[in-house]
Image (cartoon, rainbow, N blue to C red; front, side):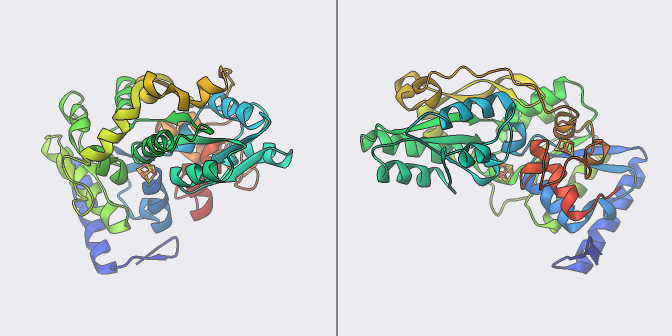
Length: 365
Ligand code: SF4
Ligand code: SF4
């Protein structure tokens, strides 16, 4: 079986699962919209061509699960003003370099002489601080529950080692409050494919309100095409039965209780705080702020940054894309003014962004 040229690891099984999805969706007999919350799911779905394989009355919509896509332009501008401070080395994950604030990106800053380094983990940022004692090293901390324990650990190590030249610019986000905000805004969704990596840290309990209070089915899914098909079928079964619950279809990586040690480390350094999401706005308790004891490591405090209220790029539909209200191809800039080589919004910049996925693997509609 092929989808966008991709060969499934077990074609016969994929075909059987797709047939089951058609059967279940047919029985439901109305349009069904499911949201894949995580950017890696978005990429896997596009790579395998799953949207073409699934029933016509079923839509898979991308959600706010890519950390780069949800970082608002004002936060990017805040990070840029730190980057422009003499003697600072900014360390950031690769995708963060291309996202623009009001008029520039970290990559632009680097071209004009700022010291910007791509890193793969918070530990890399810490190592840069150890090796450059004369510079102030700042980790541009974008990420979800998967990234925050290692950032917290790096901060703890910096304190133990008395590394006074290390700080973190906290742009971290939490997934469950974003789901609540989506549901409270009455987005028309019938269920959620929940992120595998985030769930391996937080477990299943933080999602219980989605099924309990909002009556929406939830399934934690792995990242292979077959994992996703399996999770889609479990969601369709829940919808058909009218019994929403939180199911774990990724037990090889996710335990119901998550990883309490990772959560403990995060909570030792950070506390939940209101955070601004690109195009969504402020969501209570959806981000992380430094606890007062650790504020010496908070780059916002150290560099006295007050973030501007930078508007979205003109014409960009990223906000609608990450809230499931539009598909990338609905955006008039998609493939024309906005391409990976000249991205207007973060959904085209990020390797986990919905627009990048559709651009790379073809518009499925
Ligand atoms: S960090 Fe993991 S769960 Fe979060 S968007 Fe990336 S792949 Fe998905
Ligand atoms: S195509 Fe570009 S401008 Fe349009 S929503 Fe996607 S990232 Fe934004």
